[in-house]
Length: 169
Image (cartoon, rainbow, N blue to C red; front, side, top):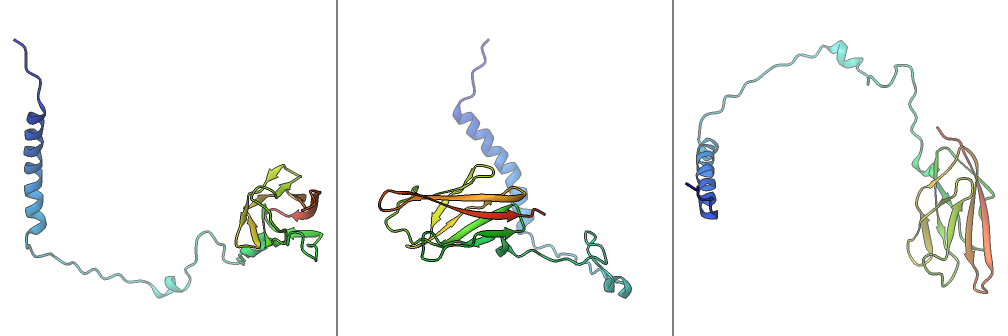
């Protein structure tokens, strides 16, 4: 009247049978030594076509120039003897600061780099004992003010402003 439920043993037996039914023919197919038929196809390329081939995405008369990746890097030394450039021009929507960190005994999080034009706060990475690098700082088209804030040893808050002009592509 009541049908018994399949046990784990029944399921293992059924699975083993299915693996054997599918695995044995596959094994023999892979290990057989049937000769393989090799078909040689000769492709002829017209000499006129191969001389005038160009990518479809670039028009024939267009000159292609790649922007240098270094145009997005700005070298700026923090609180060193010489101050950084007052105005920097980049040709993209991002800038990345890197340079020498002359500030002594600073811990992570004590320096803030903020784009005042859009409120973006950059992440700062220490690369060595006296070097730093930021992530890509988003810029708005036109003039941007980047504020670099830190505290001197005396506790005095210092804010340096770097002006960056961005001409987005």
